[in-house]
Amino acid sequence: MRIRENISKLQDRLDRLERALDHGQNHLSSLEDMRNSAWSDSYRDRVDDWISDEHERVSEIESKIDQIKGWISDNEAKLR
Image (cartoon, rainbow, N blue to C red; front, top):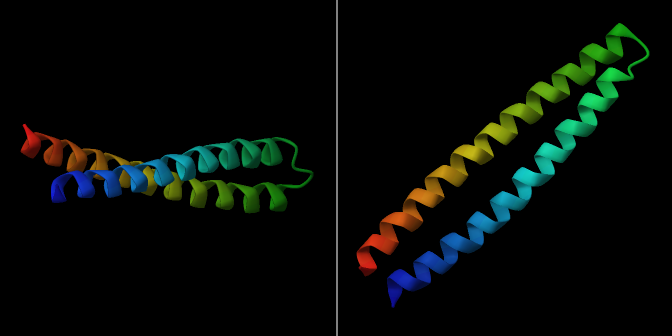
């Protein structure tokens, strides 16, 4: 019973992270549009910094997703 509860909590966390990943990817797309329409080099450089930061956040979220999927898999294996 405890393992099933743990899987449920992990699944909820995974769902939240997947929504955050989707949001981050959409934000990256918006930032790239901003960079492409930048009116000055200094603004383009600032947007590039934002893009870099967002890529880092997306990468961290992807790592967390992989980790949680592993934990879910481990817990499911315990139920077999």
